[in-house]
Length: 118
Length: 112
Image (cartoon, rainbow over all chains, first blue to last red; front, side):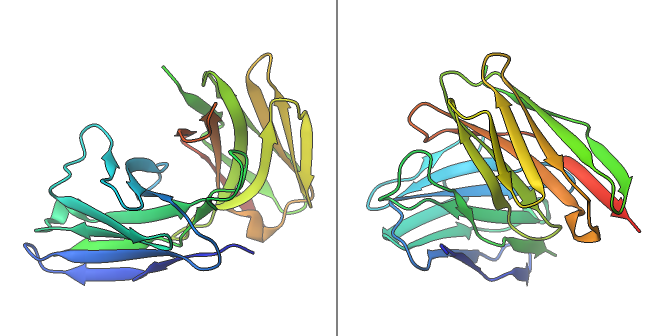
């Protein structure tokens, strides 16, 4: 079945550095991918919608200059957390849906990336 | 405002027992309702997807119901197993299916 691969699964970085997270759709094309952030014991919060070949759409309150999104191909979207700070530590998850599917087709999620900023 | 509410917030049951999780939504116009299972530290996995015209859908021991008139859904788990311990998230999308509204989830713990 359809799989979304997210890498890395966990990363520890020093404050002030940047971290890139990759989200790949392995056996389908996705013109749109979604990035979420999840705090402990809370549900997913949509951060931005990544659109292949165009600019991402960010949710209110999400800094686009801090969370850079690039969707350069139909199977890859990246999220870069720039100048990370301890408060950016969180669980980041991506999702994607087959571009050829209907509006009722499954939304496939990656397994998430645990970011810890020290 | 489009919202999805879930109850209970958390639930503890004994292995082998059944349980029912609830989801109420105000998303309009409605396209579909999805139930996901999320294990700790993992991404959500789809259990069921239901459209306006569907009242019930099963996936193994999981059975979801939908009442589009009252805007309520339930997820029934039969003969629970230890591996059912997870968060269960209700997600509703609007017409067009591009906007997904996530519920806060129900955290289920199945004890031996």
